[in-house]
Image 1 (cartoon, rainbow, N blue to C red):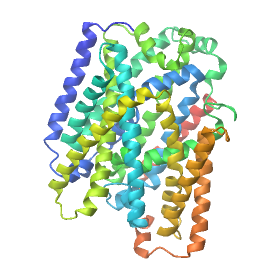
Image 2: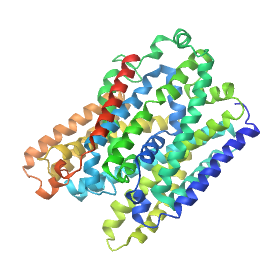
Image 3: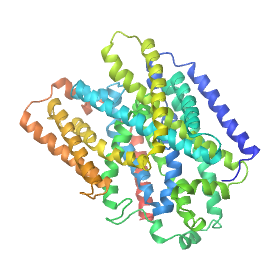
Image 4: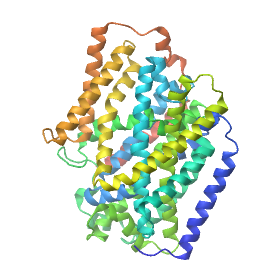
Length: 515
């Protein structure tokens, strides 16, 4: 790795200084629980959209997307464009119901539609995923990448520094601090990625024809065969929408931005902006990785692509900008995960058991929970280094955990006959099936791509829900059905729907062009 120069350090220091100033100004305006967890429900479309994008782009994304593209081609971008479609669907058909209920957490909707048991179940799973996957994973990946630039820093110390910085400003400023710093970080992310992508394209004299001639044909296709080990086309169509629905709709880590929007239209326009931004990684992160096949054919691992491109092609000053973008990704992921997990613990576990607490007391507890969760994630993160492959293993576990939750959530929204008891039993049945399938896969008894497994598990949970409901025979109360009644929710404005349709059309054109 090339050494950083003085100008690189200046750029990096300037970014951190601006971040501290923004956090300090915002933190003074977050006095109570509604501000801490939902920014006073006052977020505009621009900050919602930028924050949605920034919180989704982690250090593992900046490293993983180019690395996967170098190893197996641009099909990894399917995760990005499918996310755009799922986000738009959620904004048009689900978010109005969430905002109509004035929720603080998504699991609250399951309590209103079913009962407190479903709320607790989803909250517990979400907190676990947020800490073990999102927070600890981002801390670990960020520390590993920073060690490329600063090899003398111990792994544990680097993790601790990231955790303390992100944890303190998240605890102090809450969601308002998170989304405004995310907006800043999204801009830095895009700028850094765009500069590096341009520098890589310059190595081909800005000629697309030269790129096509230099890169293997199978590396330039989004649609992969059914037996593809990385991402088969059936997995793209079946599994990615399921995983995406949980991530962009049910995951407090992301949906908190939509819940904090000042209106349904602000949430809708924010989702449209985020969907547009989700189309950019194909060009800014994935394509440079695919081009690197011709530029860096001697790499041992795809994860080395980002650092090598930066070392060999970024001039003085640009490395600092891209490193600032990397820090932005790390901070954005960590602050988002901490704030969402803190919200779930405080609102879904503490508040129901201590209903007499006022807003300021809840805010104090929320800040304490944030720091506690930060500590737990920081303690767990170094352990990932002791188990080779565990991080990828945990990411695939996501595909086994979420499909039963998605099945019950979607059925609760749109099937009025499903009652609380059958819903909970179906959820347990689905997760028992998930655990059994996972064990069978690890033992080599089953060999099916995890994105396709997600579809099978969703179907099994739906069948279980139908069977349990037929056996139970109970019906939901009118008050429970009112929580998801579309007639009570304000629909998004027509211009938002038209804009969403335009983004869908653009996405279809991109997929067709790189099919």
